[in-house]
Every structure is written in C-alpha cells, then in structure tokens.
View (cartoon, rainbow over the protein chains, first blue to last red):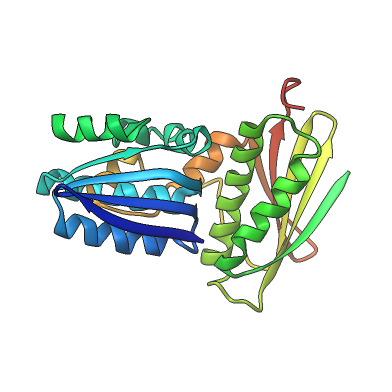
Length: 113
Length: 140
C-alpha cells in the first residue's frame, strides 16, 4: 500500500510518498505524479517514508522523464533509504533522475537546475 | 530445507509473497541488502506470472518453494499456466523505455541483474521456474 500526500511550498509541489510501491499500487503514484507534472514546473519527491519499490514504481518515474524534459519540469527526489536507493542504482535510474540525500540539498538543486 | 507458499494470482497478494520470502530468508541470510534484492527479484517474477500468465485471475494459483542447497538458494515456482519465457525475453534498454515513455519492461531486467541462473522446464504438466542464487560466505 502506498500513501501519497502533497503540499505546496513557495511554488514548489512536494509529494510525500510512503509505504510500498509494487504492481498493485503503482497506479496511485502514476496518478499523483501525472497530476503534479501537469500542474507544476518544480516538484520535490520526499521518499523518506518509502519502504519498498519494485520495477512498477521505477517504471512510473521513468515514464515521465521524457515528458518532463520536453515541458522543462524540474524534479528532485530526496530522503531515500539505502534499500530503496539501491533499486534505482541497479538499473542506472539514479543517473537519469535527480536524487539527493536531504530536503535542503533537493531545494538547492531544484533552484540550480 | 524447503519452505512452501501457495500464491493466489492477484496483485494485492504481492505484499504477502514478499513477507513470506523475507521471513524465510532472514533465517538463513544475514545481509539485509541481499535479502532485499532477492525479495525484489522474486516479486518481479511473481508479478509477471500473475499479470501475464494468469491475467490476475484470483481462481488461479502457483506454488513458490524456497530451497537451500549447499551454498545456493533456489526459488522454485511451479505454475499451471503455460511457460512465460523469461530466458528468451529481450528486455528493452533503459534508453528505449525513456524515449517511449513506457512504464513496463524493467522487471525482468532487474531479475537478471540479481539472479545468477534461471531454468525453465516442464514437470507433470506444470511449468517449473528455478531461480538460483549463490550465497556468499559473508551473506550467510
């Protein structure tokens, strides 16, 4: 089960993702991320409560990369546990997405890119 | 030593599958990272079978067995459905998937990065998938 909530901070949409994202729950991430990308140019993804992600969840993030580049949308993910970050790394998605450790780093990167 | 779990072909059972695998592996493997990757690999295979071989039909099922043999762990899946050919499936590259904006296609890529060897055979009218992983001395 995945839990997703959102909050706006100074024009930036922050999505807080918690729980587990697998093939049964990735649709919720897809819906939330799709809405976020259609309505905001700057997005932070707080993964500090994310406990598990399978390829279904990775696929959601990956499917928006091209769209975000075309629409010049900036997105940074932060707060991942080592366990979750390892899953992004094993497929090299950490090279295609902006992933940092802390919220502060994420905010700085969002303003720099 | 062998552990058995019967899987109903519904996506909402994936969490229970992961829990079964995790509780089994923690008895034999120390490394949390190794346990997590093995859970992930088997989750991906089970997802493929539930979705592609069984169309998420809750009346269907397959059996997941976990066997510890010498310095190997074997995840054995005995399935009533026809073979889903993991071995011949050509995974798209990440670049292709990004360019096409596709969500699917990563799962078996993950499995092949984590699992050492995959065998598929037919036994007693069942499709048998065997996923082998060598256990490193540091892991167990």
